Length: 277
Ligand code: NAP
Image (tube, rainbow, N blue to C red; front, side, top):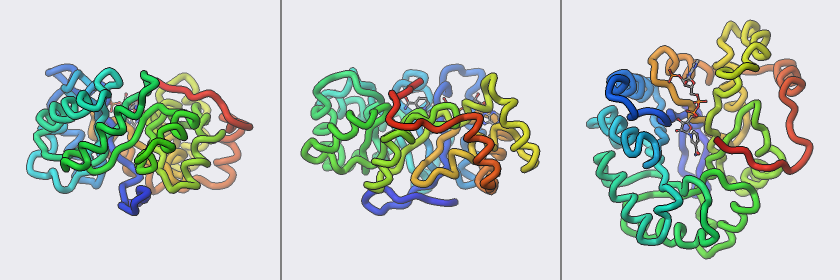
């Protein structure tokens, strides 16, 4: 598996597994567990979740999927902003650890910004690192101004990632956030990478897909994976999708493919407002 380094030099896989909408229904649970396990077997060891997903249900699905394999995994979870006071962060993390049945989360993120006082979350994260409950921390849905504000706080320069909406249809990070992160060796974690393939614009990807004997989802994912310093976390609750997503790592888009995709989905010509799900 190709990796990208966190700012402290630790390598993490460029392709992981998302879990939004998992753990919401008992009927889907077995398939979700099986898909995650299949992904782990094939090397998708970075798993992204949040206390919000299924109100803890997704973390419980991961617990079931990872039995006996905790040490193979890099677990990412997120705290709700309304829990992000210094003490609230600790309590939320304790609940997540319990649901995941583990003693540590590898990367813990503030899910989005709600309060002016982001230092509270940062202090909470520092306490958790000190206690060995998390190993790295970061943010999600922060635009460049918010990210800079975080990094300017004492201790904020230990930011490990910013997880944002980034795909062919949502190229806003290229305007300022992505170059800024690259200069600092902070990987950007791209969520909803398959949006172009699961929306009405999917047909636009067809010609490129045909040239590579691939699906439109694989082309959407291959494009995100072609961006230096970016980690993609597609969610798949079906094992065939998991296999297709891993195979996207092998697709090398040509300069002509990139030119065609740039014409259909032009990059921003300067800083652009953040988009989020
Ligand atoms: P996504 O991964 O872009 O798309 C998921 C959808 O694509 C599901 O319907 C899935 O179906 C389908 N799919 C997966 N692989 C496919 C393939 N090879 N071919 C065709 N369809 C395929 O969207 P997402 O779940 O919104 O984003 C990914 C992850 O990012 C989330 O799960 C979550 O962990 C994270 N996220 C974070 C935030 C945030 O605010 N930080 C927001 C949104 C998402 P099946 O499930 O049936 O396989």
